[in-house]
Length: 190
Image (cartoon, one colour):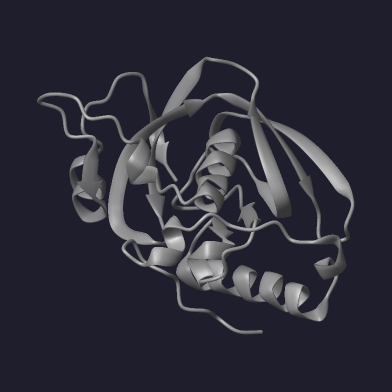
């Protein structure tokens, strides 16, 4: 087990296109170790998701896990640990939802991002089995946020600018003053 250094915005690994994990690599000691390191790193940094590029590995791999009683994400439900290898996201609706998002790679910043409200994720789990999950609401946003990393996209790339509206804020000010006014915002953040 190791806690790895998280790549921060500006590091080129966060903008790289990631490569598929091969069938031969599935279940290998190095992949299992990477998954374990990512989980410990996510917990150490207080995240609810982490993608391999965030620990300097340009691979199609992400983890998601959050508790129902989270102080940071109240009323957002619970998601047990999911290991997503070579995931593919498909939007199941054109309807969008907005959340204030944050990121381990962009500490102390929040931004309002609108994303499809219902998606399907097809992926391989850590045992090598093909899986599929449909997600809505907060979970759909978490999936899309983490899986964007696998294409070299950060949440700030998706913040829409509006004249006279601030859709980006420092975390301290966000917590102190509340989120800046946003259209149809869900009063939560990831």
